Length: 459
Image: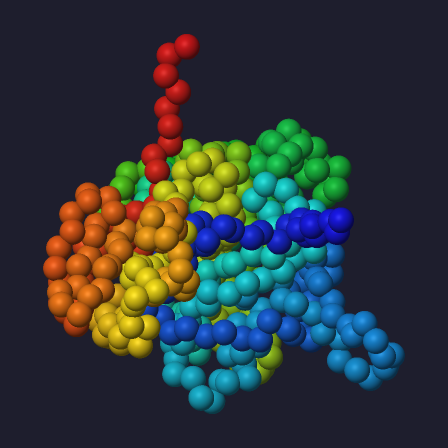
């Protein structure tokens, strides 16, 4: 007996009823992005390795390189790889299409990415991301620094996820503060501080002292900044109280104040000025974001991003700064699915099954089905006329299809399988009650699909 092949770990696959909800999330994201004026692009999944490596850091460890199984790899053949995020392909795309784009260029991508890392909760080898970025010539308005987290908040609220913490900081605050302390390599210190959630304050302090030669007093000063949190502009007084000053620090404080002021209308506690947020990637230069699920505080970041200066412009030797944010769609969806928080969709998109019998006029059944499809009704004509009617009804019930239709030369009748109500209809104009159908759950104006966190009862 042949064995069923095992799935490859880290490459998630959902059952149809879960996939329908994931598609609904994708549609909500697309509609929301477009409502703010962002245009869709889809760069190639494959890039030259040298392009992907432009992101720096430890990218080499995560790249899936491509080669043919047969045939020799010649020395001059381009080395290709799957992209491991959407930012670098976007930068290459903008550079190559620069003369055809209108600036500021506002784009979104809903696309898969691939990373060669060990699969674990929240980390996949293949995953879907939802990214938005604004690129402009010379400078990018700070209006967009505040718009990014607002868009994410709207999307998650529409999906039904409200307990989310958007942590915001500004790299100029951290770098300017470290310069004010006399630290010679602020970027190295930022990369160490970025590990605070993984190794804790004491681990960060030890790294600052052992790897950078900082004194205990200076390392403590770094940690004091990283421990500042504020749900409003109160972070300003907390930073000033540390007694460190520099021009860059002042600039960062003003930029973060602008963002926090513009987001002050969002629910209290949903946006937090968090001085520990550093984003270790070396291309961020200003505002940075990290989002966390409040119900699962130990779960990895679910969205992140920030402002950058040279990521795009380096390809063209011109100033093309940008700001963007990336939502880990697969990461969020996989977690909530695992926790039983996803309100699953139907196993089928069909609204109605037309009962088929040996006496049925097959061409007439097909004609009626096409009339209904013209009105956006999803119809199946049951495929085996010899099947008992009771088994055809069981087929519809098991798939969650809400209606069946009995066609006749006289009046056609449709039966609601939930209520048992059966009525004569005009197939050319009939519409299902979409309250509990898949179509009712793809409108972004409706909150849907995520169930509240179950609160354990008393033991």
